Image 1 (cartoon, helix red, strand yellow):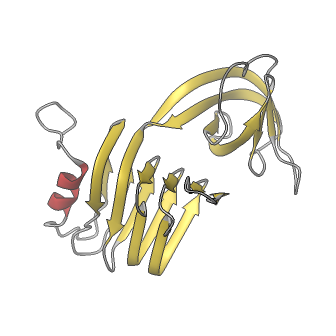
Image 2 (tube, helix red, strand yellow):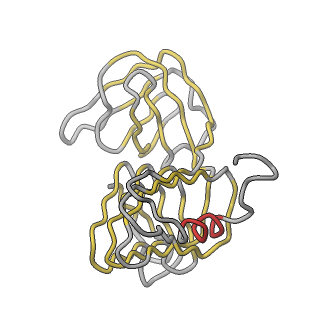
Length: 212
């Protein structure tokens, strides 16, 4: 239960409990509050068929009303314009949420007046948007063999690889996966791994940033 007396103290505890369960066709959801969790997690998923979803928490930084959205096309990136709205802020590599379209995009850069996203916006229109940072930060996660699991709205930021997946089926949605390791930020040892509106980076010397 999401109460002071009912919530788990660590993220790993939730997965340890899940390891004892037979999902039996049901969906299991794990919700993680905003905070920095210095844990090296093993994401056990129990036995039996069923879906496991792990939801972090996004932190809202700004709400913008009646912004002008240009979708963009092909090599022309989408933009969000509101005069003077973004002055003095640093929003690159964060998320923008389009309220009417109910869609997220990663912000590439901005001026005082214009946000530029990576890729295109959902549509060209005037609508409200919100800017989010990742509020849930976890050091490392290892997905053991033959697991099936989905992660949403989490920043993984470890000193070694941040994600290690072993012959599993894994989806990352709106996640930021980064590390200071020179040996790899996300390591997939077989299996299926997919990302949707994610930021993949490496802060070590010569590291790269990739949005997928």
